[in-house]
Length: 69
Image (tube, rainbow, N blue to C red; front, side, top):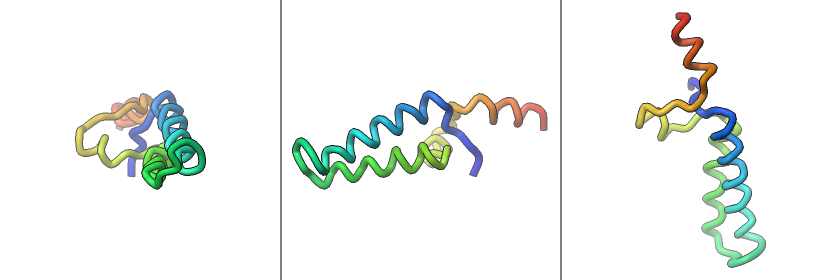
């Protein structure tokens, strides 16, 4: 798995993931908030399978390494 999630993207994913998980405990208290685990997992792994399918990459460091190879 090559990294394809950049720093800003990672921060957004963490904030959104924590916000969704908070919905399980406060607010509507619905289990839909567990969907927040998806952006949290992709943020901590620095890899998003959907980005691979769509050919998107927000990690500039990996782009420069691929050009050197």
